[in-house]
Image 1 (cartoon, rainbow, N blue to C red):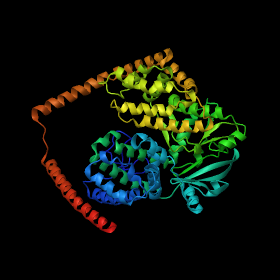
Image 2 (cartoon, rainbow, N blue to C red; image 1 turned 45 degrees about the vertical axis):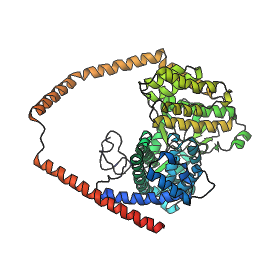
Image 3 (spheres, one colour; image 1 turned 90 degrees about the horizontal axis):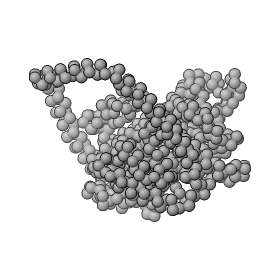
Image 4 (spheres, rainbow, N blue to C red; image 1 turned 60 degrees about the vertical axis):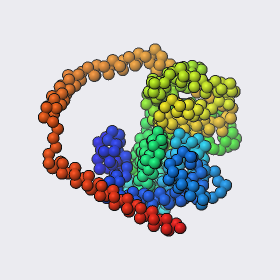
Length: 557
């Protein structure tokens, strides 16, 4: 995708920041007038957020001994005003709720990153409720007519008042009458002004992430700026409903042969960037366990379906629903598992799918050396370490698990322990694997509410074994050989052009070495002006921020 003045989701793009991937919003740099002003507002918003976090007791989560001196002092002062008797994770969730919808989304996203906030805090953040008061019916109608380009009566026979409302959108039940007959649909409408608000708050998140990296270089292992990048992309996908409809369409193609799982079909004729229309699902939510049992459904079989469906989507397809909590799952009249709300999706490339399948299979068969080898083959663990030492560390995880009863084994806990051990071997954070792990935690939790004695190994084994045999058995080896042959032929066909470009580059380098590199006077003058302007704005910014802090301290006092 070519970088332009706007992202694909309508936010400003900065090509120099992320030229090799879809452009994502980042705030202007500190060295421009606009950047100085934006940084000042970000600082003020962060000060307000810091006050709220301190008041709700969230600062107790910080490990003060590990922080630089100024940060330790700020946290100790902040803890003077905190409410007593609330754990850090719950206090953080409460503070984020009070700060508004963007911060709630940040908390929900961090709940998927236990590597960043810790397992206990991630569990507390899972309780964040994304519920808001609905916006007026007439505003929703106006947005539908504007997005779909016609009067409401020509689009829907009836449109109900909102049946659900969240920070990003609200949902209406509607009736469609066309040549196919009459049917119910769900109409999801984007909340007015939400994109602008998220854009403003994302600027503040980026500012905070950069400050964290500067103040504590050790935090760079967790890649705070990249965490905000991922949040920005996730939010952008959630706020363009055409992309959610595309996710529904892609997954529908993947699951055509799955007998126990289905998803609602999108109505493309009534879908736009801010409006999504899809099949209305009448079903019983998985949170109603007594109701499911009373309806005569086999709860143990439902637990199996949930686990195997997720593993098929993640390992077989490399495209999975990344928010499979009980509120997004239900059972329809035919007894099929139905997933809704496809705003957050996860992808896994072939390398990640092979990694997940082989480590699960290795733990099932107790082949710990193979589990270790997979980490090295994927490049996740530096080759400077010993495979045997790494296999020994993995055995320390696997053997205690195999001493337990089948219903006591947690695959999610296994993956969590595995990622903790890999930190000892300098394995960097892998966001794609963390999302897989976190979704596994949620899915396993849902399955165990239906069947507390669920045997994770026997449930996962058929899906994992099938993928291993298909892709790593004889047929898979032949397929890899064919793919490699085609790639080699393609590379060989492009060899003459590559040689010609190499020769031209060598000639230009030789000429430059003989004559030297020169800059014309205009370029030298432009560089000088830019450096002088950068220094001037940097000095002014420091004085402005210092004055703002003095005023803010005086106001708080």
